[in-house]
Image 1 (cartoon, rainbow, N blue to C red):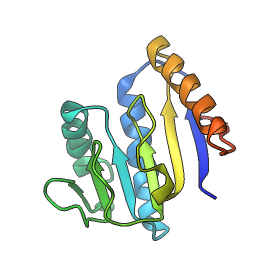
Image 2 (tube, helix red, strand yellow):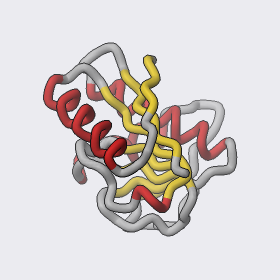
Image 3 (tube, one colour):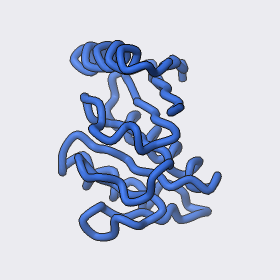
Length: 139
């Protein structure tokens, strides 16, 4: 069954969520997983794309926007269907992915911004209703 985790950040900084997404994408890729980072909109996807280019000085994280290469090791997208099943989904969007059954692991990144907290609490309950056992991880 798909493993679902909510990584909880201690602040409201939206850049912190993007940095955490970069770290998780790098770690997933280094462990041989295909990674799909689901953003909430095109602006966030572009910002994450830029951040991944300079995130690690010592190592490049091979990534592409879904429109440019949906087969890349790390794909940044929105609602697109992932091309590589059973990888890692890093969800930055406020809703559940319509493709959750195609991933072996899902990580939702939460910060203390009130609207996002509310959305993520709803998502936590939705995962439970669908039979998943989401776990909370404090960062």
